[in-house]
Length: 565
Image (cartoon, helix red, strand yellow):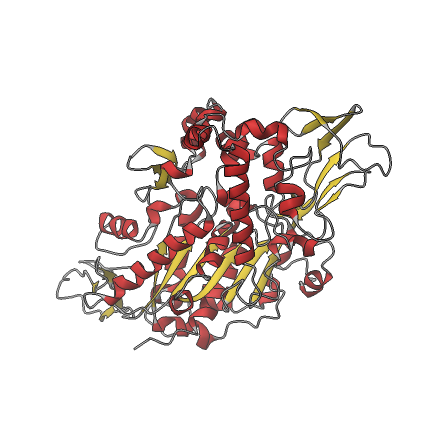
């Protein structure tokens, strides 16, 4: 974007000059130009953007929101901006014991930190960098993981607005839109028979100005609570455009990552949501839950998360068991069409049973295979803060943990009601990659006598790192993940929006076992982008295919907007 004209243009530079407006904090437009010498006779143009707006609000995934202690500036969690910058922070977490983790990640003592770093990149909203930073802070960018999400937010701003849609000074589409976005969507992952964007659809974006917002949420609290906070934020954003003569905006578009998709679906259960939301784009949503949550309760987290949230069950359970939102990501009742996903290799144990009730069969069970066996109840409250609050007559397990499980069950049921599971204008994308194994099923394995049921077996020892000993000298360990996915969300959950969303994009070289309809709809061209190696869960929006699916969806959703002047 150019807002300065050289004083002494080169003699061969005789073409017209285009100056694009920037924005004031209140949404009005301004342009900065520089007076030139008399001999500069080039045509000077000021290009104004649309006065009508479609706000795009981004909702991050779990651990994607900066958190601080309530009524304090002390950090609870702020993701590092770089690998080098994260070393001191991770070193600090490394030496926290279970009690310290429970107190630090206490949902009741944490809140969103809106003051996190902002990476504006090439985004220019005002006359200088400081003004742009200030405006992006006001749009919530400081609440979300900067190195993971800000590149996407920058891309959305650049691609969707006037200077990204057209070649400067012409009515011709910018090469990127023409050469990339008008390709066959199947080559970019569509399994829904989508048609390529037309030139008219892309130029239709020019009717609006797209302003990119972000809304963090407390990922330790129930997603239902976060949904109420997000709904209030949507009303606030729309209010910005309704006051003081600012540009008009009637509805927003939501773009979500991972657990943010569950929050958005909970928003849709609230009064007024349909009147305020034009459409939703979901990226790598654990749409039917993720068995990885079970694994983490029995053996700790993986990757960098293990340093922060716990390397073993002893460290992870104090966080998981007290954060309803994390329990809400357990496999839903309809996960993989209700088929069993918790099994003993070579044995007959396969849960949930035929009635498909994982809450009773697994999550609340005190048996050795339960989410938190009776012997591990002591892991829930190592700091003693729950027991102190409850008093001697109440139980940490029955009165807190099981209450949280009931809340998780209610939440999952609320966002899977027929006809209410998704916004009617929903697009989704996910990765199904054989090189990024995910826990699609959980297998306990060991020298088990053939066809022996272990449901009634007694737990005699648990090393809290994925190995248990049962009465009769049986030793079982958790197997490594084996399902194709994105390293976190297995294909079964990633494709769950199929048939409910208007469109689903699937990226990667893997397969969804037992769902031939998805694989039959995918491109067979191995050279197509959709068939390249699938992305890792956290980096989905850094991948060109995740960005392509998102921009395609926004362009389609924007056609439904009707408030342009």
